[in-house]
Structures are given as structure tokens and as C-alpha cells.
Length: 252
Image (cartoon, rainbow, N blue to C red; front, top):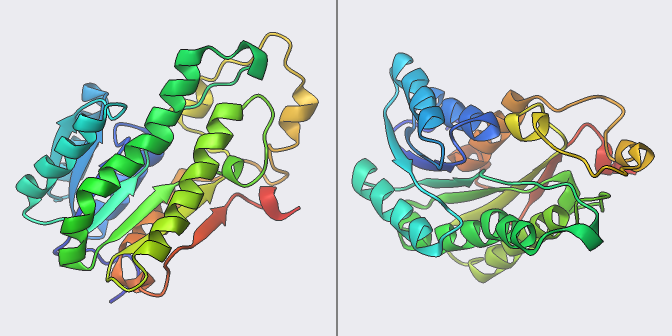
């Protein structure tokens, strides 16, 4: 099977209303997948779905808040009912807050871990039985911040490091099963998340520059194509991997 060929397969993509989630949904649809889109942003989901339908793709939309465990489980149930099967779960949804650690509000810490780490786990938990039936794949979107420490991003870095290690732990647990678990770790991308960040009033930009990268921002489409590859049968040899796609930020 060619890289990224998803014809006849079904994929659930979280965070699909914008940014990398939208890019991933479009890439999977181009590869032939029936795509189930999940996000809290109804308008954005409709725009993504319209783009997929315009290209002749099959799509189903779910509006839900994945910070709630029950919503994660029901999202998988609805996706399987809509598509008749599930071959790939792409955990793209994420949230980020810049803050001094001593000033971070408890609700920001808890929301970050709920969306970035707990939601992927609950989605995976619900998806495993279906993915075992289809020899399917899970692709988790981590971050360069899950590999190296980044100033003012304690909650984000903790959640993404946890997601990388969750990926590896599940890969070991299911080493003798047909399901595959992998992660990608992008550097900074020009998405709605990155464009609307608020920095602490006393931010030290010299610290920010340390993880900004010397080659500029990562292209969303490049990351989306990598996710699609890992979701496809062409990536059958990848299991327990975390692939950095950050233009060298974590190289040294």
C-alpha cells in the first residue's frame, strides 16, 4: 500500500475545526479515508467538513468537549456508528497557556492536562477494541515541548511529555497485538493556537527564543502528511515511535 493510502478506512480526528486538526482531516480525506471530525468549535467543524465534501470526501461531524471523559467515549461510539468501523484515531486537539509557574491558575493547569493528556487516553481506551478489529493505528500529537523544557509552559510540557510516554507504554502493552501506537512531535506552527497566545507581562524573550528554532515555523501540511502516513498501512513498521518534526529544535 502506498504511503498515506487510506481508501476504505475510517479515521477519527480531534481538534478538526482548525489548525493541524483541520489539516490532518483534509490530508486523511485526500488519502481516501471516511473522516469523523471532533471539536468544540461547531462553525470551524462545518468549514472543515465543507472542504472535505467539496473534494468528494466522506465526512461526519461531532461537536463535543473532550475535556470530559464521557464525551471522549461517546465520540468513539458515534464515529464507529457513523463510519461502520475505525482504522485510525488521530489525537490532535490541544490547548496551551503561557504563564509563570507561580502564577498559573489551577483551572489552566487542569484544563491543559484534561485536553492534552486525559482526553487522548480516554479516546484510546474506547477505541482499542475497534482498532484491534481493523489492525488500526493511534497517532498522538505531542510537541517539541514534550522533549525539551520550554519556559512558561510547565503544564503544556508536562502534558506533552506524558503523552509521549503514554504512547510508548501502550506500544509495549500491545506489542503482541495488531494495533500500532505512535506520536509526532512538531515544533511551532502558525495555527490559531500559536497566533492567539498571551505572554506573561514580565516575559523574558531570550528564553522564548531558545525553543523558537533557527529555521522558522513548521508547515501544518507537512505535519498532517506525517500523521496520515503513520495512520496508514505504509507505516506498519512504526510502533512506539515519537517522530520529531521541528526543524531541528530538539537536535541540540
